[in-house]
Structures are given as structure tokens and as C-alpha cells.
Length: 84
Image (tube, rainbow, N blue to C red; front, side):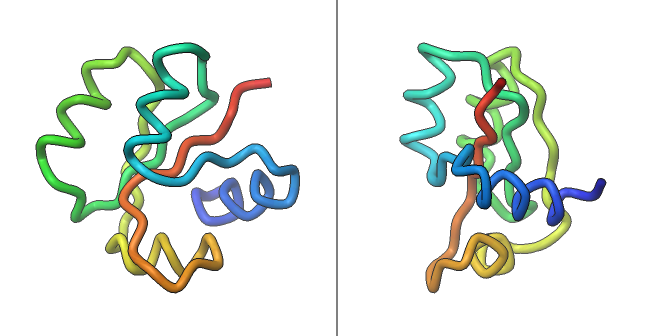
């Protein structure tokens, strides 16, 4: 299953957290299945999430593309899929 399919499936199941700030809040208190970061996300964001000891996947596209996949009209740098 590729990243796009993973995101769409999680969206259907309401297991997605969108946005950098919300992602960090969730990581502090829970264990996500995976955090997906847009390829063009700022290095500061990438560094913080990579140092959080969670599974991270880089989305091979821009934050605008990630926003489109999530059905949003704006760019999204970070998508978190909640753990089971």
C-alpha cells in the first residue's frame, strides 16, 4: 500500500491528524502508526519529528499535493495516522 492509499484509508476511518502543531500534540501523548511529511516541509519541522522516535515517511510531493490528497484546499506539511 502506497502513502496516498494509506492516507485515504485512514481518512475514511477518521484516523488522521492534519497539521504540524496537532501532530506534535498527538506525538507527546500517544504513539502514532506513522507520521507523513511533505518533501518540501521546512527543515525545522522535519528535524523535530525525526527526533521524536516515531515512524516517519516522506511524501514524494509538495505540501500542496498532500493537501489535495487530504481533500483540503490548502497546503499540509504533516499528516499523522493514529495508532490502533
